[in-house]
Length: 172
Image (tube, rainbow, N blue to C red; front, side, top):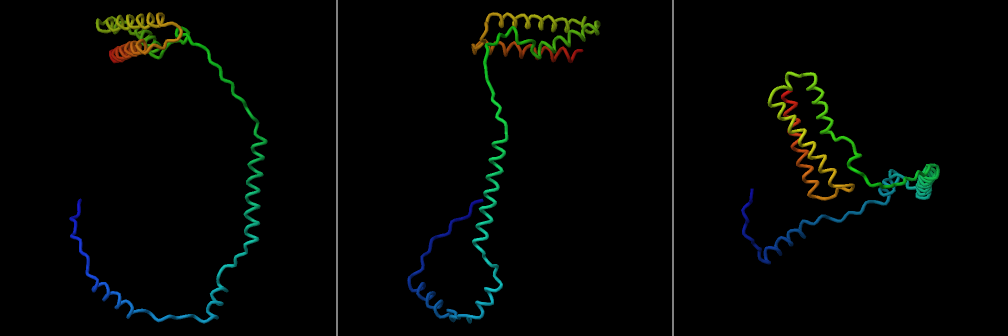
């Protein structure tokens, strides 16, 4: 919501002078309370004992420092060594897709009739073909497996396998 802008207006100097004169006319009288009133007020104010307060804060800071140092000195130092070794993809083990495919193959052994359907057989054949393609890709990439194009191909193969495994699981 936007508010309309009002036009600017600057009053003339005579108007400002008239306002100022009225303010001087309404000025309050000056009043100074008796000395005894100040003494009564001071009696009710809390006493400020600065040396004791600074001594207490110094003591608290010292305790915090000693506690921190004692924890630092008592805590045993454990060192961590980091090493790196090249990883071969053939030794990594099975992926989750491979595990899912094995589970579904085991289910197929139990439900022979379901796995004899043409659609299920086609999916199983396609899964086997994609798995072989993935293994060939791993064999050709070698030890380091750092080519972006190969990683993209592998990702596409895994996506296709995942989709087929999902369809196969729905059919079973």
